Length: 68
Image (cartoon, one colour):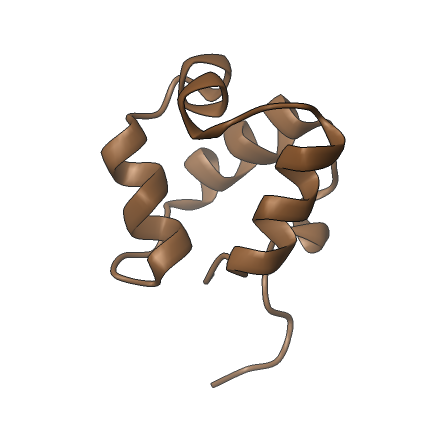
């Protein structure tokens, strides 16, 4: 599942977190978060869940629901 960069940044702003804070809170490297938000790589399902949980949002609010 591909993370939508705008949705991710909105959720981060609502949670008052920057990329470094989110990386620590989600237990994911900052490099990985940057790659996910840029669309270079896609996170595993478990990793996506960790990111959503750290931002206190449902996964659906972070991803593009349209299929490619």
